[in-house]
Length: 115
Image (cartoon, rainbow, N blue to C red; front, side):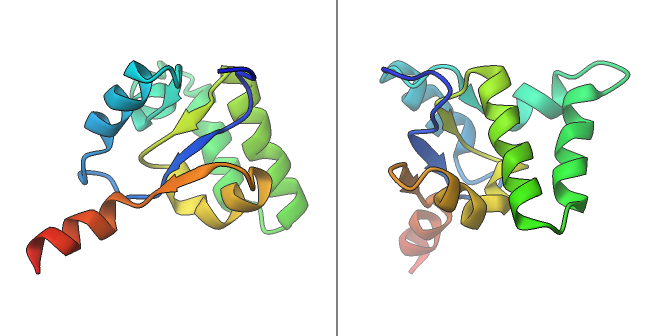
């Protein structure tokens, strides 16, 4: 992948909809590192700096400020793909920030299989 801080794939599904498997597949295809909840929330020891950054994003109402904070999180981590929570609740922002990114909706795939 040519630019490590440019998100190229957005996993728009909710947690527990195959996001860990999708992360593994994307990394096999070269989209590494791929952001997952494990990246910033679970693997974030006290004082929880990474998780707090996402909490700040959640609380920010100003669109430009929120999108700048999201971009900074991904640039700081060198991510070029993202799946799972917390970014999955900011898909509208991610599509605006990274208009050329591919969007994978694993939730749609789950519902389609059930019908």
